[in-house]
Image 1 (cartoon, rainbow, N blue to C red):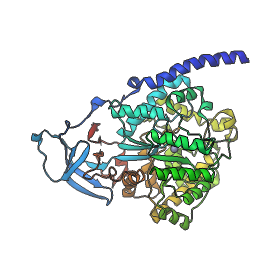
Image 2 (image 1 turned 90 degrees about the vertical axis):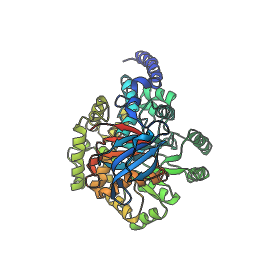
Image 3 (image 1 turned 45 degrees about the vertical axis):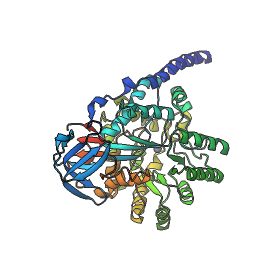
Image 4 (image 1 turned 30 degrees about the vertical axis):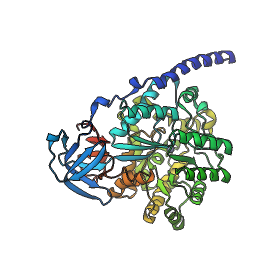
Length: 515
Ligand SMILES: [Zn+2]
């Protein structure tokens, strides 16, 4: 194709894409709740009580069940928990829980709600992408997740969606967010969305850049202020010195001066700091500066008892996101799995991963997105890992993630024994990791060696502590938000019981699924 022709096509595409991008923000009604709409949730009349009777309430702190209780909810809060028999005469809405098991609303402590979990974005898929992003919130809620921590979003799009949730035009969880990621230009995620697709670049013009991309201290300060003005309650850093993308190695890191500025800003504004960390380099820096939470798990070190005890002493939590490692550990990259990765644990995780890739997952993602994501795995054989970046294919290096699977469980168990707060998050929004899949992470923690009670704690009280919301969420207690998941079976006996909630209640609003 000659140059002239090429630019002609590009210009035409540009016009189409601009129109599509404008549409992207303007189609909430088409892309809204297909699974749930506001008509499908209900609650008590304003000021009246919602009474849940015959509840088996799971106390996640102690791992015990209090049976046959009545929960009274008013104005979105738990007013009382008692043994009384509710009376309808005062205008209360009474629901019989028929001795189902009630757990606190789950929390996904690491996800990206404005990302569509696609390996590549295309102009032709713009409507699917827009629809999927709306659906992300619905999936979270229907999976029992009543609060999410968004770890880096397109701020404009996020706020648009939050408004829809607020107005009850979109069913979704409560969202705690950082707006864009406070990353130095060129650091993780070291891909400029403008380069990924012309569509992404234009969409960002309307919906904001998920990367802060600062180049110097002055710009850093200014952009951090803009993030906080936009409602950010914490700061997300990316701490690694190496790229996780196939075909790329070193990436820029924060200077000590920049980190000093960031930590001072956080302190002045009472903000927590969360850091994306896959490397010992990032771990050591985070340990030194005393970050609030480490995100993900490191690939290149077995941590010592001393390092882990410093973590506990400095009150540094971790959100391991082990299922991302499971998904990004692409066995498709090898003709045979290298010997060092052939452990029983990894072999089993690969079997779980294979079943997941082959399943239809229609409740969790648009089928065309899942299909394209699975097809993208062929790029490993087609290009070879080293050649991917220069060919415009942005996929994660499998060996990093196999090493996380190799070392992660041991490091995490060590942290647990040392008393480090361990949260639970998915990183959903990245390719192949779909919103609402917290249960996959919970089951994986279970396979690593966490008891059912500990898994429930990670996804509720521990996450609430990481979000600095322990007074409002994480347990079913008087005075807290009425965020409740109703399960048929007892998750203390069987963690899979969390898979299909019968009912999800968020701030007193009931979403019933009749299963
Ligand atoms: Zn993430």
